[in-house]
Image (cartoon, rainbow, N blue to C red; front, side, top):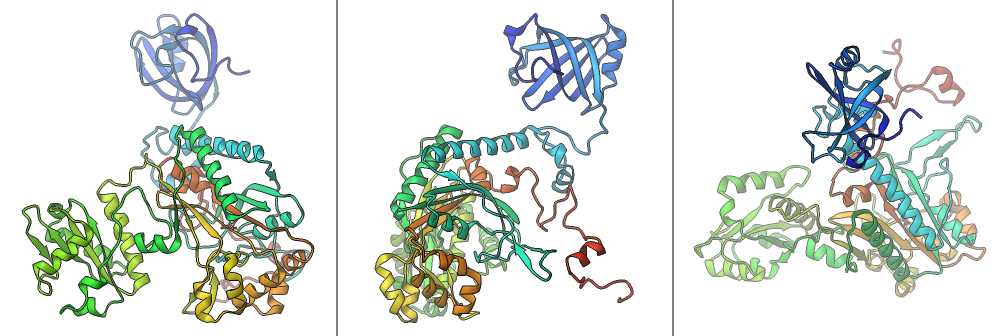
Length: 592
Ligand code: ASP
């Protein structure tokens, strides 16, 4: 072994021991007679001391050690005179007797410290160096432990871990597929799974009863900070269960993981219907760490002289408690502009300030008397010092915009504490959603989701409006405004599944070509089944109160979907292209 101990384990009790440590040079400090080197590995940092009076040549070699050199040192553990209480090994140091340089290092392009001076791009290019930093390493270690605990829990519940293929045929989960050309089947392509959905259902038909997999999924979507083209799910499926059984099982998993990983005992998760979530928060993944719930003002704001409100389908607002004094006209103008950015697209923003002196000031004061505005304030239960923020327009759009404003105000007011965890189940999702552009229904979850039992009859015989009202046995687990997981009870009957495909605009031929295998399997004794998938990267991030999932992925891609370290994607050789029967549509130099 190149070491007797790691760099994080020596304590005062080890004083007098002869030890051998190996690791990276964090920093070397030369004080003439003494040279101190901080030696780092995954487990911690230990201070090495070289004494010029004992061995000038050895000390000289130590002085020359650069950052990130890999060394091995043999020496005696001794008590430090000035202890470092911030370090687990801070009571001791190693009086070095011999030093071996195992490898030199170029000067790293950024500092390998908890707070680094490296920008995002640089750190992604040199990911192997970024991964040497303790906070990044801790995230990757957290992820590993979370996977291990997940396996422990699910195994204890009789789940079987099954690997499903990565080269498959597309599963429509609503995003674009990544495809892989097949050399042996000219002109044909595999798709990378957006999820193992159909395979896990087939496993239920096969009698596996309870399946799970911690699995990579691929979706070719436009990227945001919390999205990656490849991400990981804890994917699960169960036979002979109701929605209630699934919620109980995965509430159990979530509680177990919080307890094991963070020492947090979560209380039972509240449940909220999709309709209620939209009504109260304008979102199907509400952050319920704080209130600031929507109040509908249609009844009290319409019918006066303010045409904007009169013409709107919905007038709705939130109460930013205690904010009246914090927002000058200029601040409100800025907030309005923030709401008008194309990402949100609000037309305007109306405010009512209930000043601490009891006076009322509003941007629509011309159209409403003070008594009118008092009625509004009453609806919110507002107190002096509060400020109402109100939007109007088409129902769904306005709710979405107000959701953004609520989250922004929640953040500004410090109501979204990353150390507080508020999970909930959102249930009773619509089965279908009407898409105006394509004039088609889309599955709100996916095409395999079952309508609620009492809606099956209506689904088989209903008209267009009935279809919109159908509810599904579909559910999402939401924590702190982040969708952690989603799933549903599935259709397990061929006729109903065919009908669903038809509603979604598939011809019987298309349904057969794409999903014949599943429809076929349903004819051989498919048990009732259902499941769920957790976003594993997101779960890691949320459990640590961090927004970006990238921090928990060892080798993430950037916003353009590029891996900066290996420089991918990249062109392939002409030979490879022709072997795959691919023709480049990128113009050649001659063609230009
Ligand atoms: N396959 C679904 C998804 O990826 C989850 C499920 O329904 O189990 O969202």
